[in-house]
Amino acid sequence: MNRNDVSAMIDHTLLKPTATADDVRALVAEAAELGVYSVCVSPSLLPIETPDGVLVATVCGFPSGAHQPAIKAAEAADSVARGADEVDMVINLANAVTGDFDAVEADIRAVREACPAPVVLKVIIESAALTDDQIVGCCKASEAAGADFVKTSTGFHPEGGASVHAVELMARTVGGRLGVKASGGIRDAETARAMIDAGATRLGLSSSAAILAGFEG
Image (cartoon, rainbow, N blue to C red; front, side):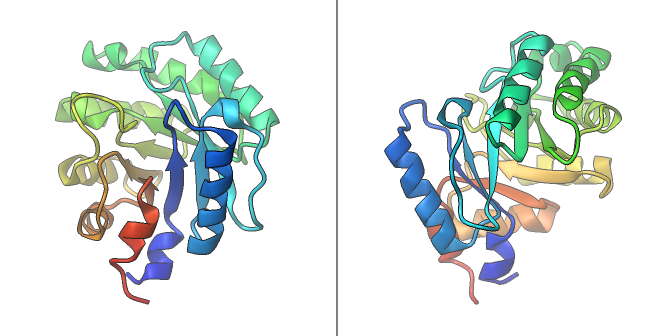
């Protein structure tokens, strides 16, 4: 893939708790220069203005996921009202760890109903903290609940971020019916390329410029 192909897959991300409005303006300016797909910021920083063609993404139930579904739904709806085109929600990991995938599905469905299409819903499952069977269960619950993407990680979990193995497993489970977003710990072009080769269709990056510098074209 060339540089333009990769840039069109990037959610250019700024989710540091200390991020300011000035930081967001710098992020948006860089997004315009790089030609990325979207910018992703915390809900409290919405609304933001972006150049034509650059979408706005945000997070929900972030970063722990340990929120009541109704709270996540309200947060997502408020973000959409403030201009978000896409919402990346964190599941309740305890439900996944205990194998209660009906609860995982219900959690996702609450957010999906609060922000129906054309809003894009991505489901963060923290794959590094889960077994393969738990990853598969979360992917199936995400599809059943009407999500558009499954996403590896918040980038804040102590167990780590995206891995090639997790992306391959997620891509195989959703079979092209959902997108797969690799996020967390992707800091160079080699890793980004490996995630794409594994089946990622979107990349969550905070080091977008440095990574794109490693691609030709």
